[in-house]
Amino acid sequence: MSRSMRAVRTDWGPAASVFVPSDMLPQVIAAITGEEEGQSWTYSYSALDESFVLRVAKGGHFLNQLRTMDVGLVLSRVQDGVDPADIEACALNLKEIARHWTKFLDEQGGLEIWVDAN
Image (cartoon, rainbow, N blue to C red):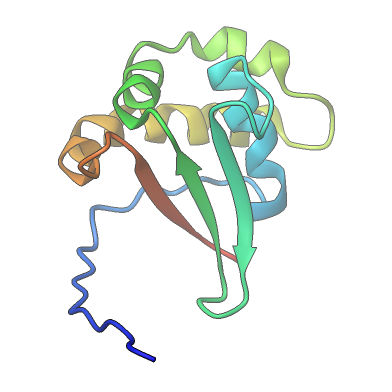
């Protein structure tokens, strides 16, 4: 039986501090996109990499949502459990970093973002 091998290159982009617990980040992403997990994005834990992975099918659209988001609206959509100041800091940092992440879109327009587990 034949198997394939391929070289792999991982490019690390600039990081953004998110200020909210890793397991609460999906709530913030849902507030930004207006979509629940599974519609256009997924968020899962990778034990191999010891990190969470945010995968967005339409990465360009997602980055545009980050750049144009209304932080006040995001704050109103996130449920209790996260300090509003942390949500605001997270949203503002994502808004700022979005322009730098454009070059990390894959050939199909998807985007993969790794999030520290701790």
